[in-house]
Image (cartoon, rainbow, N blue to C red):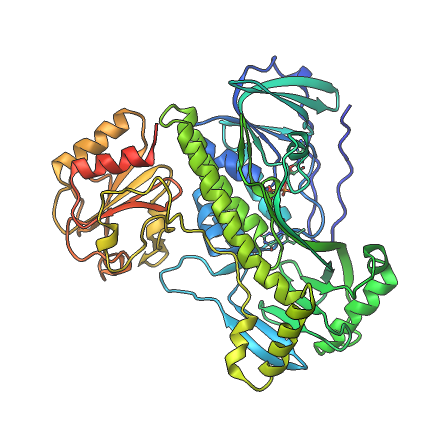
Length: 563
Ligand SMILES: Cc1cc2nc3c(=O)[nH]c(=O)nc-3n(C[C@H](O)[C@H](O)[C@H](O)COP(=O)(O)OP(=O)(O)OC[C@H]3O[C@@H](n4cnc5c(N)ncnc54)[C@H](O)[C@@H]3O)c2cc1C
């Protein structure tokens, strides 16, 4: 019988709440479910919220009674915030978060590189926002709890899965024993140690690196701005790297590499932790400052992915599908993109609006994203913790040259998580004018946000289905285009027309956004009235035209929803 921990977890900054377990005896016998999600981390909860936006109910099973423990994600990217805005939690994140955009790399007491993450006036969100993962999970849970299409079950552990031709059967253990749940689709969002992945005997591809890092979250009052700090080869930890991040609630993360041969147990001994953290604080100019430990753990970098995320009726997502190093803040930031993608792809299959090809596309796109991230992350890991002689020689050459030579300094650049472009997706229209545009986001690219007015951005108005952006100063969307949209809607496709440019409401459009300074036109590379963009429900571009007509729109929709 599953007995989850019912004691509130200790924390210096997060007041844990223990939720009541969901017990089978208190509910009617379960009917067959359409989608069941195992895991309530960022991947599981965003998938549930996205499915609900597309009208698909889901059950979320989570083995614990509380949010996650200890040091987990703290840095969330702009694209993640745009996704979180779609599921309704961006404001909560922004309220308590610490935004930032500068990173400093230091060597021999000198700042040798200052990274500035681009921040455009058209962006609503900062490049990175620091918030502890427990808060993120709380905000996502509150959104799930407020959503009638989500049946959230605390203290329910998925024990075993059996696959059938048209559904999966899950044995779920609870504090009062097991019950069986039948579900058309099972989403495995059960994290890096995914028991479902082991049960299906799936192998990941990629690499595991040797170096170990201590991650310590400490409460300390440091009068420093919210910027990323990286120290290479510090005197107190020769040859190794130390990172520091400011977190909300007076917490700092100190992240340092262990000398070769030292075990995690040795490194986590209180006196060893204390002397090293004291040494780091002294090195940055605060010797003897008082601090308190919240949590410490040891971490090693892995760059691994499943080569396919869909296995029969079981779909892997987030850390269950891939394991990414924390340098470059990729785990949760990638999980949001996975979940957003899975939400709309699966919803359209469940609702009969597309065939299994759409799910195969989800897997191909997100495996492609994972492989790209792994290639980039591998470069960062090899710089932070060189695995062999050649890499070490190169890294040391960069370090010493950077003291006097500006040209090597960009090699310190820390490749941060960024959204993958689905350039070669089968969902991209083959008959549109993509190649004829001189600028603007092309096939597969994420959307470009545009500031329309104070506290009003283009992306605030989009999402939840396909979006057709129609650029016009005229008074009406062409009647044949409106008819094609209505036809698609009649078949159940959620598709909204947004007219951009006109000062007053455009007939046939669901909404009209003025483009007083022409910034939308500029950012989307639109040369003249009548041009249009089609955005998928995850807001990536799948078609764009210099001149749109009904036949061209229909062709793009047929391509984007393969049967
Ligand atoms: C020290 C550290 C720092 C990090 N920093 C960052 C960062 O700054 N930015 C970033 O993007 N990422 C970061 N990450 C990575 C991030 O924490 C993970 O990538 C993210 O939590 C993955 O989300 P997930 O939903 O896939 O898995 P998880 O968050 O691991 O969630 C898995 C869920 O499944 C549940 N579960 C497991 N097994 C079962 C079962 N059998 N039945 C029911 N439920 C089950 C668990 O209880 C949990 O709710 C960091 C990670 C670490 C360790």
